[in-house]
Length: 172
Image (cartoon, rainbow, N blue to C red; front, side, top):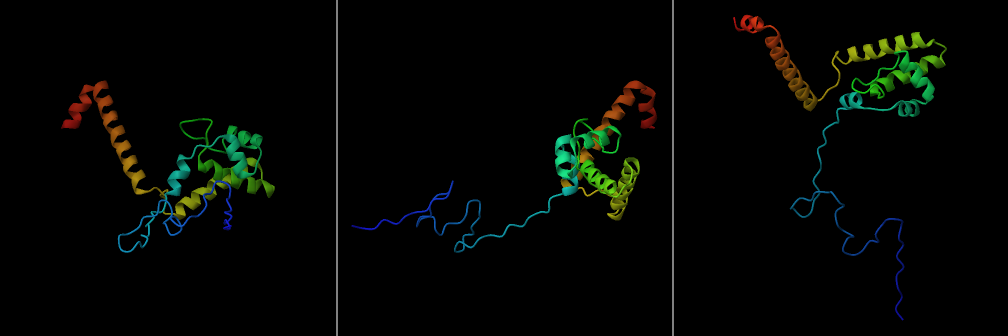
């Protein structure tokens, strides 16, 4: 009677077989020269731009910062935490930064208003130390440039419709 090998199976895993033993993992690119793996050259994500596009609700900000939902709502209502421009119920990463800094200042006994003021100043100083320019990547800059040009075209068209003399003055 031949012995059967027991195969341990983990949850959701396939047993290793002779055919897949030496195979490259999924998603790995192999080069034609003997199966050597190609190294991927990653581009650093633009975390600053992602941070500003982030849209969290008040509960998520509270959990991230370790404060109560009531504190987040109170600080936002008083203007200490900036809300996302398009959605008044959403917060960007800047609000998370502010919330963390206000929380830190409050644990040191500083009032809400003063804590918010110092947090704003701290973040402004941090921005200045980065050269005064938010960290925005090349794809975001091209998108912003396109948006600015579109706004300029729309403004020019609107001004020409409101006052036809303006378009004549611009031509001269």
